[in-house]
Length: 202
Image (cartoon, rainbow, N blue to C red):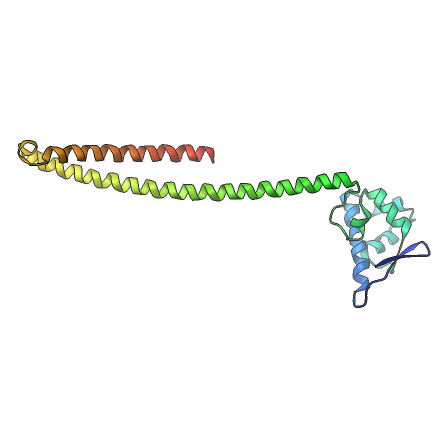
């Protein structure tokens, strides 16, 4: 945990926790906050009143001991426009303003929701596309089959001039074959049109 001792924040961790890790985490967040503001180390050290960049470099590297001056935390929060929770690694949100932070979180959640919705839509599109492809293949096969029947029937009719008059049920067979051929062709055309329109909308 972090305690105030002689106007300094002193890191005191529970038994078994690596102190150096806590210091490094603060240093990493200091560096991240600096980079968020596009500051180079050589430009940032003067913002904290240091005469050279050595001290700030040690802080960022986690090699400045286990105490962190309160003024440094406050100053870093003001200079880098980040929250103290971010500096201590307690939050991934660097925004100091609670309302802005909340709005940012809502925006992130909405973005995640939209991504999930888009993924679901794409899955549905793929499923429908696969189903339409299967229907298209079935329609094509049906049209091919009825065309072969129609061709065979026409061959028989050509070789038998009295087929329609003398063949019992012959006229009905011809009519049914013609109708089946027309319906199969319409189904294939309708599926092709539906697939084209679906592709434009997806």
